[in-house]
Amino acid sequence: MRDFRKYEIWKDAISIANQIYSIAELFPKNEIYGLCNQIERAAVSIASNIAEGASRTSPIEYAHFLEIAIGSAFEVETQLTIAHMRNYIDTNQYNDLIKCIQKEERQINTLIQKLKPKAINH
Image 1 (cartoon, rainbow, N blue to C red):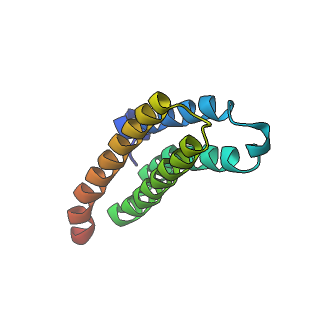
Image 2: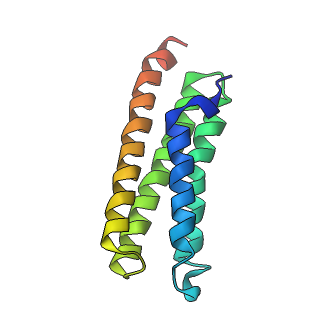
Image 3: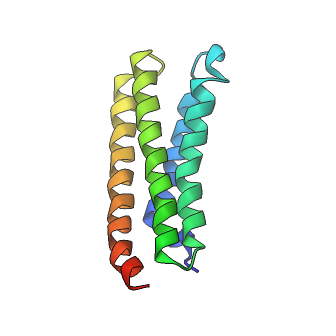
């Protein structure tokens, strides 16, 4: 079992989720059960799947959860783009968050690639 709390990708995912919650509070009230709820859930899913995957002993299973996490990151990126297009967030916030999320996506992908050779030999 791995200690997910030590992983930078988990810490970064927690930071992204926190930032998403802060900006989602500013979305229009009619988005509470729409885009606001969806983007918050997807952001939480990134860190949650990194943590859940770390509990798995098999590299294949761990990589599977990381693939779900990266999918959630892509989902957040998409939802942020929509929020920006709807003028719910300003361009500076959007650009800063997109950079953070894309960095997270690269980090998750790198870890997946490192796990693949181990999965073959497992």
